[in-house]
Image 1 (spheres, rainbow, N blue to C red):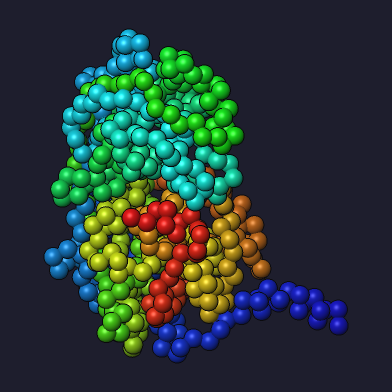
Image 2 (image 1 turned 90 degrees about the horizontal axis):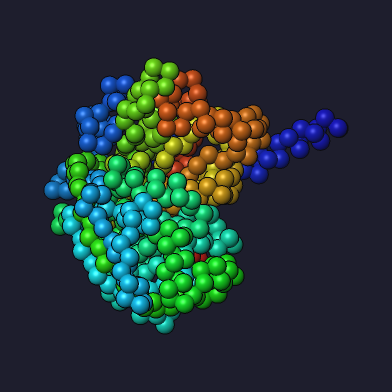
Length: 550
């Protein structure tokens, strides 16, 4: 009796996620998901001959050609530009010409103070203009947020039109990591400023010391910033620069801001204490700033690869559920143990492989889902989510007809799959979809096991979220009922040894059967969304419900 009881206790977790029955046609389709095909895709995409799949290089184009070939063999319809599978993306690296950069601060008493680059200020190169001049008043806008949903309205009752705003970098501690990271992106602060009519943003970070400040400044001329650029020359996507109305963006030192505030009759320490308690401290300033800087552009062409399975419903087939995955990796870099090719087998050949196998499963369905299913392999995720940002800005499909994005980035299939963590699904009705999908394949569903990482806003799904489209990114869950119980520790060790290193290559770390189950649950998520006449919705009152919608 005791042994029977113990056995029952052992089986309870498995019974809790016992499989539900599926439509036989759907069950047959997911049963055909093949670990051999998944492995073959990873082996090709992570081969040394692709040299790390860096955008703009021959190896990345080999990956593009491979995906197009797979799309054709699977039977996907072209969903790119001009009847092709391709969407051309211009990737731009902007570098500051520091020899032609100068700023002058005019204080309330009329004194003019020439500023020193790397000591008093730094400036981002512009993503759209090679030369910028400005001579405008200043305003101070506290933490620089215009976010009523988190009760911070630093622009309230303040006229900043045509001004450059100064911001103290401070994010409330009580927010989730995803919201915090979104607010910390320079482009987010610049977008708030542009929305209120400002033409520039200078951020002061209390935690940045003089050495770090100078390093940031030097980086603007050595490495610059990345952006994807629309055909009209406007910025499509960049985490560093918003472009458009924002003519100048960068930072100022604590020492300079103290001097400026003293000239304005204010004490910076008092202001900082007020900011830390959440008080409104924004105000117009009597000072002004003028400047000139120049940017040097380096442009390359790359591609998103997009195909679709057309839906079966006469009306709903004109709506789309997207499976996205980034095709790029970081190319050739610093040698480690004599190896300089960063193959990116887990990151993200495995995600692309799973997406291709999902497409293959859809091709085997006798009756296609009601909505169309789109497969979008994105470029330049590693450069700052630039390919997906371009697609979100200039989609090859009607944006208002895209109902959801399911992103597959670095599944990390290092152990048998028993649990999944749908990053970001808790913000929308997609969580219930994942729970249903997981029940069909006997998987547990758990919250983000690494909630402090902010991973929901760090991969390609983020650009769909910013466009108002419910999205998620299914990652491995760490909760285990049988083997590999300490998977979290195993993943941590693996990441420290292999993430963005040449050792991320095809080897015995892969558990291919887990790739099959991962593909199955992602397939079922998109299938359930595509079949439901109701579109996925953001949770009422959620930060992402309307805050990021454009």
